[in-house]
Length: 176
Image (cartoon, rainbow, N blue to C red; front, top):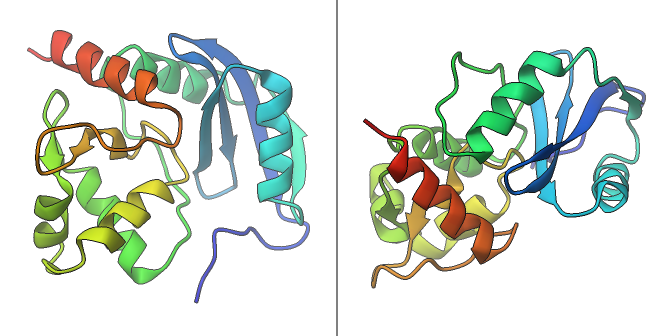
């Protein structure tokens, strides 16, 4: 099984910037955005990245990621990206299918976990689809926050339900 790990010594550049949801860490490999983490404390986000990618060479470079982090900050306010971000998502084949489908959910809309599982051709894999949402390494860029329970309640969100509520509300307000 493939993992989310980068290769030993692979360089990952990152930045941590304030956003409407607290602070956001954006990390990128030579192939694309690899991690987007949300939180309240830059030190905690930095430690989380280091724990997640222990074999990588981590280099903080705020200037190099200025345009990309600006796009992610815009997402945190409910805005659309002005351009497609290159992504470096590493996961199982099932996770990849889920993450691709999440990117097809229009801003301002939600689907259920059951709908997500059906859309990827695995209608009985509702829990697995939810687990893949939870394993999404790039918050907001792959919009797992747009998936809700069958009864319409929000379900979980790795970055906290308050952030999920804010993201959904702001996207709905900023969707033409």
